[in-house]
Length: 105
Image (cartoon, rainbow, N blue to C red):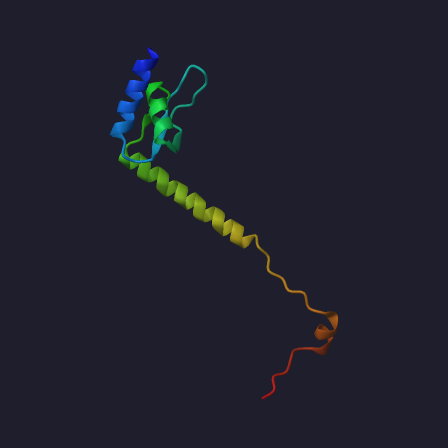
């Protein structure tokens, strides 16, 4: 493909995509590309992948399912991070020997 034609098609395809980040679904390629892998990429990269035949744009339903799955993964990761934080407090030994503090009622 002529370089001028390639960049012309790239600009035309970019103009049709309003989002800045796009979900693409990979296609099987002779160099080992695995089909069906969904990825969120910048619009320019998505257009390049589509023009080169390495991916296709995801449908609205596929994109929504992908984003929902990624959100669930993010929430699970945050829960694991919060659970991994152990809170502790250093208390001097003489305070422990004194027993519980008495209130002045």
